[in-house]
Image (cartoon, rainbow, N blue to C red; front, side):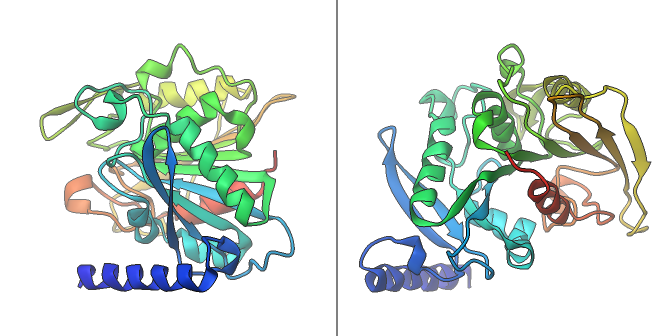
Length: 314
């Protein structure tokens, strides 16, 4: 069935390209369409979803969604359901693909293509933004990035190295790669919303080595240290305002606490959702609970990310 769907998608994209005569996003409706270009000597790809509210007459916000390890941008669509919020609230979405399934987030793990080749993903994602902006009417003051796991770590790297491109960033089930700790001093603060489960079996709450199936996948700071670094970089008051979120799904095995860090003059806010009992999952999303742990349904990360981002401009 999945193969048949992919064949249909391919035929649909080919038909669109013939009808458009060139790859012009302005002629594409709301179907996500995969596009590719050469960057850094590699063929790279991405998908664009146009909101049902977009007609090209006014500049529109753009959200970059970064997938996890061994996934593609396609996988983020059903995982997060973000396109529905794009239609409801009004923003376009781009889903880039990592090189051979992994973003070069700075962990520098031997044996993974993106690290071995030192792929310039910071440059690639900025190039994607430039290409989308050349075809769609993008509001450059409202460009955002969100990621899951490896994608969340890549979002951290983008905030460190290209903060001027983003009005806000969201990280789910990720932490700051240890290799970036000494180099992450962004020239501009970027508002951040983050989500981590305390029972994450992939990205350890306490930090250290990430291991999957016997593979060493590098090291990260602990989740508390990651949030503390975001708070410091964004010039926030380190004393959080903590609120227990309603236990909207009493049987899911989680409780969620929101920590809000208020910025000082010239800073940017940090909002962190600590998920007691949560696994390596997207809150409110669709993921493999048997493999990745418990999903919290007390909150919807996609809804919170969309609203947080659109509340901020660069």
